Length: 70
Image (cartoon, rainbow, N blue to C red; front, side, top):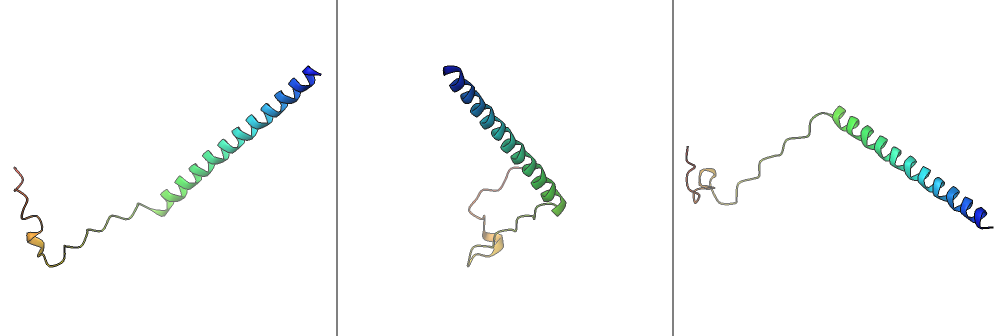
């Protein structure tokens, strides 16, 4: 009786482990496909510069900051 329960438990554990491995493999494969697809689309778009603060001319935006030392 105990050995049957043990065998059933082992079978269930093996099944769950197999499913876990299969899921992990699918997830990894999907990630690889996704990366390949992303690479095929080309480089990521460059970030657009932020608009100037309202009412402030472009040359005065960082006027309050000290000049950088060269």
